[in-house]
Length: 185
Length: 234
Image (cartoon, each protein chain N blue to C red):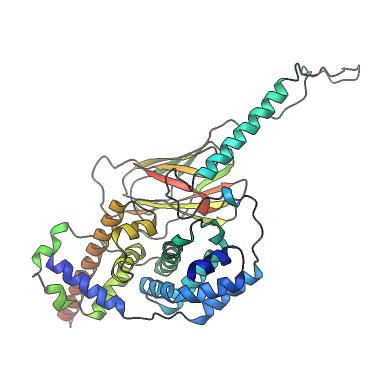
């Protein structure tokens, strides 16, 4: 069904593109929202992605690669939207590899609540958010993430590692700022 | 490891929350765009790179190579044709002719290739950064620095160069690097689409927080960022 729509849309049939867009938009919007964390930015990212899909679809030679290709496009448009919003935002400095050694093993489960996770997630870069979303929400394997992002598997693994570390560092920074506010009060 | 697993489990659960259904408006706008931009027949479609082809020399790069080979063959045929005409025709020189020492037809000198464009990058923080752009294609008109906005942190990935169109014939290349003094080199291949950016490693101590680098390239002809294949070395 989807492949047939892909082939017909690539030939320029707008009805097929309409149906195809409605078929895949839920998946793409869900990814975009989780990267940009804003409904309107996610809408913009989705629209940009759909326009790109229409414009570039004839160049996609293998219709079976459509899903991976659309993941790539929505990641790019979402990251672009997030960066536009984030310009001037605060950067997270990575902690050394053994930074979590001082924490009790299950401390994240106890401490990091959803609000804290939201704040920390917003503080890491859009690229880092994207790779975390691809793995932990879209459920892609490392090889699939590498394929989607067009990078070697090893690079995908290292980016995932750094993204996780950055998120952990952001949670710890949040801990410190909350503790600091407590002392001031 | 347990802490990491806890964090990942919690992240997975948290990401499950949130919308899964797309609003209608972006879909309707995109379909409207499709209707108002009907697809034209593209006779060179087979030459366009597949967006999902590997970035290295692969299926996606083959059409570009094919085009380059065809161009070389055409140039060779033209060169043979011109060469086989023998000596250049001697133009009649009348009494009113100018006393120019040149007797043959005037030919504009071809631009010498490769053209080299030195660029000092704008750096909000850290040591001076330069890029020497070496253009083998003859299509580059101008190379200049863009303006990174943040003083720290990066908007671009560390291990790849992000290419975007600023307009139809202008590209922006964005990447990140440590704030040590760095002399980059950007080589643009003869087809104008294959590029290699060399970013030497830092030799001494440096701040471990990478910062953005932005290079703007203006070409004589339209160029699509999606067609550019760019590598970052080392």
